Length: 626
Image 1 (cartoon, rainbow, N blue to C red):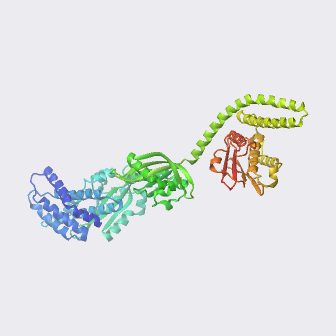
Image 2 (tube, helix red, strand yellow):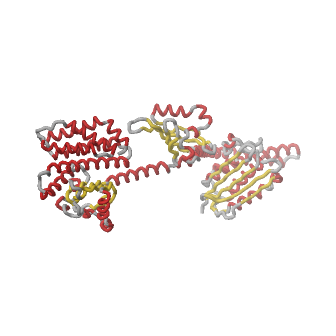
Image 3 (spheres, rainbow, N blue to C red):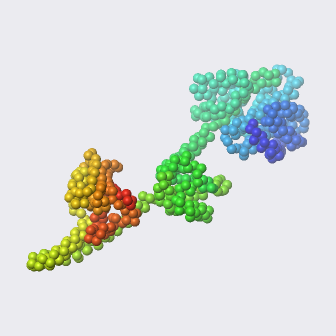
């Protein structure tokens, strides 16, 4: 017996004895008028004898007690049945107390079995003492009958759901309690006198389990609980735990065996269901795309799912036991953001959609949405919290792109009106200028008129670009090799004087598939970006690299330069209409805006990465369509 249970029994001895005495008195009140005095003293002596066995594994005190109990047979109101019931009530009280102490099913079962064995042995020893006294003056011919009668009394166990089955020395069933009847659905008259293997599966009969158990019992006298299978009357196979005890008479002669069958079938099914549900819930949590993090009261991380690993880059073993603040930015740590979150959590019990910046393992900053809830134990005591963090970085980018697209749509509508209102007057002005130039010989006037004509043409070009972007495209879609468009765009910009001192490196994937798109429009995108690159690179040792490849159902084009680069404030505006960093007269601010519109119309993507002093890289993704 586990020492902690023994100490608990001793500590609560008063309660255990009182409960035991109460059950015995209630039983006597129900079944007989004459009361036996000294019930509390008797129960106390029995309790102390049991504790002595648990501690010393010595039955001496128990034997002395049972011998005294057997001698009470002549006292007024004595009943053997009530005495046996008193033993069962004691076993019941111990079992109830054990159930309250349960913390580990395996050790719980082992110690429960020890209690069951001791009470079974108590009944048997008491029967032996009682039988010795009862049979002193009875003939040997009547002795065997009394042994079987006492054996049945010793097996008084119809108050338990376990199947208590006694066997004779030939392993035939001799007693069959109500628990056995409920468990196996056989009536006593259907099994008494038959071999126990009536309950065996075909495999167990073949394996000769019964014969093996007989040999074991003859050698050891006891077979502790072991798991096996038994077959019910309707053919259902049950998983049971079986305990065997060898029975002898006063002369030491083997007279049979006592077995206790505990049905585990339903318990196993429940455990499997619980395990299956726990595994399912664990799988849902672990495989969530969101980061789900468990923390104790000190914000120490105690659980970390795969979503957290993917978002923050930390494997589970690196963060378990560390504080949640490893995910905070330096600014958040300085401002006490975690303390603020904890305060809100204590006030409200939960936090929903709290947005903030977090830091990944590689130092990257991401925007997350935090939902955090308090975790309580079964007594409603707070034991920690759970945090669900969703990476909002891409969502923010998408939201910005949608806003940008909406802005472009509005500007496009304005562009149509501008083109109509300004286009016609510009045509008239241009025509009149040409007439004036032909009608004069004044060279100075011609020079000024040509300057006006140049600026008018510039305005016309700007209006044309606005119209190109704002009106629905009527360009022709046809199968196109994008590598050819890139190469043609490179050949065109080579005529620009700025390209004379620039190295252009072209690395194209010759296995790119043909895709359907408007070739002239896409080529214009490449030209616009290449011209911007020529503006950005240094006058000497300029370098532009262009590459193409395929991935994720798209053709990817990358144009990189070694120019002066751009700060974040400019990157956020370069696709806006009329935004330019070039000097007056050198750019309209519409080239990249138009390019953005073309790629968007193809359901593609265009983006830029740049740092001041490190050049810029434009990335274009065009879906493969056929």
